[in-house]
Length: 273
Image 1 (cartoon, rainbow, N blue to C red):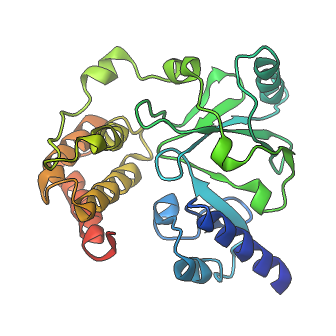
Image 2 (image 1 turned 60 degrees about the horizontal axis):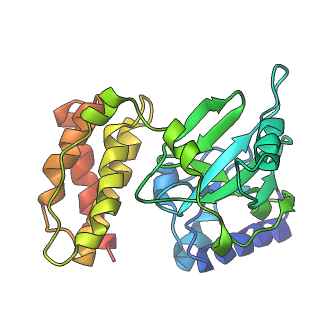
């Protein structure tokens, strides 16, 4: 456990990120979320964050990746058989990756930060791009090591992050079979067609969620839809059917999916913007 000054510093760093519109939540020293729904509970609300980071085991600041924060991270680790850090360094030197913010992780790895593209969202993956190069996108989170004592190796402001290169997004695209099974389109409320891609990304994330994160991702997607209802860009009740359909494609039973969707949409009734 850290001393009170360390706790105060952690909270100050969390509030600083929240001020920049980056939602955060606390983890313990082993990177385990301390909130009931993990990264789904990430917020920018100062009052809520003060309560979260007052939890006895709060030791790290974490940030959901993908749509919630607008950030995608390439995570390079070092293992006995391969060095993901070296791969990312080489790709950067070769011009395959643009210069961006780089932070060191606790065990000597690196995080490279890129702007999330709502029109071409990416999911989390492990070693799909290359050995020991993981991706943190929709449905995942990272420890924000710069707010938890980690070194910033290349300091690019968050507002100036480059887009994730197209070749990376293409390499991470689901198979043609998975794309054919993506859920159908939901009509938007009149006059709000600009939100279509945002909604499509949320529904696709729920439909393509891997085993082990399907229910959590569905709850996250339901909350995002509840927010859109509160914003007036999605008609009340329009999302329930397609969310359940997306969950069915992901492998959840209709009964389980309906319960999770209802819970997420109810959250919007009291917490929606």
